[in-house]
Length: 185
Image (cartoon, rainbow, N blue to C red; front, side, top):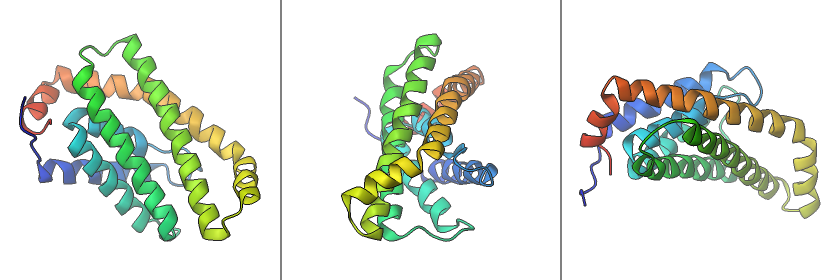
C-alpha cells in the first residue's frame, strides 16, 4: 500500500479554484459549482487531500462571502458537509476505474445525497443559532423547500453531466494519473 502523499500547493490551488467556482454563480440562489469542484478535486487527489480541499474551500468561501460570514454553528456545518464531499470523492476515485454511464449515475446520486446532507446540517445549524426548537427546524425545512429542491436538482444535474465530462478530459490529458502518482492517498 502506498504511503499517503500530501501536496499543499495542489490543495491550495484546487481550493482557490473551488472558491472561484462558488463565486461564479453567487448571484443565483442555490445554484452553485463549489460542491462540484470539491468533488472533482477529491476524486482527483484522494481522500485526505479531498477533505483538505473541501474544508479550505468552503471555509474561505464562507469567510469571504459578500453577505457576511456565517454564524459559528453554520460555519461548522458547512465545513463538515464539504469535508465529507471531498473525502467521499477521494474514496470513489480509488475505486472507480472507468467513467461511463454507471459512474455518471453514481455521481448524480452523490450530488443529490450531498445536497440533502448540506440542507439538513445547515438547517439544523440555523435552528441551533436561532432558538433550538423542533418546530423551527421543520418550519425552516418547509419554508426553504423551493430553494432546497432547486439546489438538489442543479447539483444532481451538475454531478451527472460535469463530473464525468471533466474527469474524462483530465484523464485524456494524462493529468489524472500524473496527479494521483504524486498526491493520491
